[in-house]
Length: 482
Image (tube, rainbow, N blue to C red):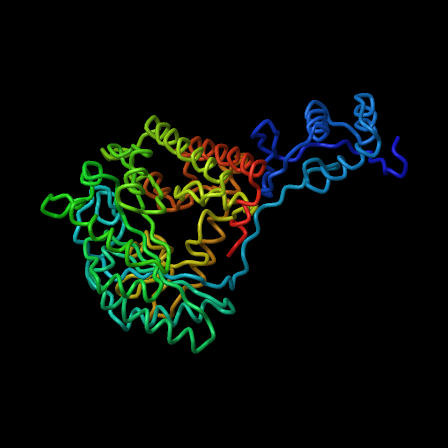
């Protein structure tokens, strides 16, 4: 027996975890804390022993002593595993993720500066058969009065936050560039008056980019996300003008001009994967090597199962294979101390490194709200002008806090019972509300059609995280930077 050790009558049990191996080292991903724990030899012995049978501390000490471990080594290992919540004694305590304070401050607004678009992308959730927005009778373009009211609301609702963010969206955002320019100036002035900083970003199809616009974006440090689906053949399957012409030849010269002239903030490509656009590696290489993007992210098209462009379960498996290929390349670059441009891997690794344990899948309704052209306040940009997810109106009382609080109380991870036994829930938290609504007709539904994919992706990222932590741990420091 170890001198000074306190015996516990209750046997040890293992906390909820997901085990994975990286580089010959066994790791545990602890659920729901989101912590990642590397096991040494004695730690692995203890986990195996407790996993086989609940054992008291005295029994573990005796068993490990018989296996040749010293008393001090055993004491240190048990204490570390207890403090890290790998093992515990007594009754298990299940703590649901906590609701945020009702006064949770707003951080970002997404302004739909127009509901019009000069493209007719086949999978667009705003204009396809899965459309949920109702724009009849709404202005086609947001005006200055609405955008200024949105900025005023953001400043008020952000409370003590020192910084806020404004995202410009559409339709095609740059169809209303004059309003964007006005709003940037207004937001900077108003935020300066109250001692807040403000950042800007936008999403665009790049068709309307010109030197004047690019110079403005660079001057005001506006982050840009460009929607593009790969080379000419792949991009032009879905991303077409209303007359059927492909957009690739129009946008690529403009994108290269943007990349050459705008270096004050991030510029990334967003690829929408659909049934005919699944070549992850080829798309990534084209957009980075041929077009010049330094960051490329992929997202499956949101679509009900009957849509021809919907990605079924079998095709999603091939997508994961493409993601895996790029993710291991990300690992290789990270070990060499280089930043890779695969943003899906980068974003997930950052969340894992932060030990994030989400109560909600994203900031929608929490720190983010969408604003329609007429001033309607919505859950997020995907629900703008929809009867679903309404959160008030800028000129009719502002944010409907009762509706917002009700949404947060009913969409909390604790209310998504299908998720309670899933080890990946700290990162996923049930998935996108819009995806759930399109597939199941309920924003509160868990995205069960993606569960296997999400678990596979998170397991892959955990293994990659483990290898980076073993071979070049200093690379992970960048995830702690603001």
